[in-house]
Image (tube, rainbow over all chains, first blue to last red):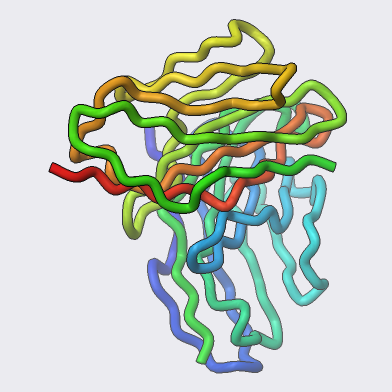
Length: 115
Length: 114
């Protein structure tokens, strides 16, 4: 069984640029959630996708957007990058009806640095 | 709205001593509660979870946690610390009706002294 994978591992971008982060969910999982973890803080929920539709969003601006594909992999897109977007971005996958399974499996994360 | 408070951003214990990490939550509905561990430069690994079954929950690596509704607490303990327990620990809360989106506490970094 393959776990949750994320790419790239590290990324450096300049303020104002756009970035796309990718996540492959664990086999059999239909729900992907994205979290932002700033340095020294706990992860914060960005949004969740269930069967290719957004299923809830945290307190993040519209320049944070996402997609989920038919194979349940997912992308997180961030436009107009700001310095405060520098963080570890974590993807988690789970299964069940509209993501009701409480067992979320996390990937290793993508470290984004905005300069 | 849900929230999680972890008391103590850093905890230092001696190898072999008790590990106690405190977590208090607020939730308007019966919560699901979790403890995750994060090793340096890695993602989150689930230690244990409470989902309204037994109030004393046993997890991996010798950790356990007790759900106390009256105290709105879910403290994590391990009787004897090992050097490999040095990591950051996060308490989180969710509810099924919200698709189990997790709300995390700020984390507690554990240092184990030889």
